[in-house]
Amino acid sequence: MALAKEVKEKLIKEFGQNEKDTGSVEVQVAILTYEINDLNEHFKTHIHDFESKRGLMRKIGHRKSLLAYLKSEDLKRYETLVKKLKLRK
Image (tube, rainbow, N blue to C red):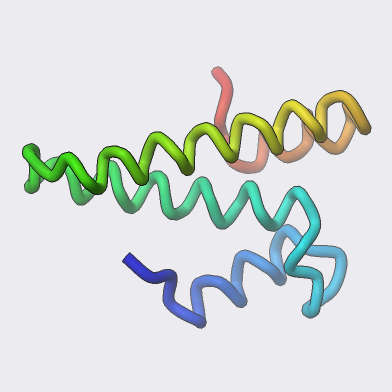
């Protein structure tokens, strides 16, 4: 499930420091979160798609490690990102 170019540009504009900023942790986490949410919607209709579930678990693990890195480097940026993406309750 590829991410549409328009959606990716919107996420980069919203979470990046500029329009070419695709590598910052915030942008990577935002893109992964969008893909994870998209896969969760996919599983509502395709319950037995086990290959995609494996991909979902990899994306969740990658996002988790990026968030751990951001938390150790800059706690304020981490808290802002978590609030924007509504990851923690």
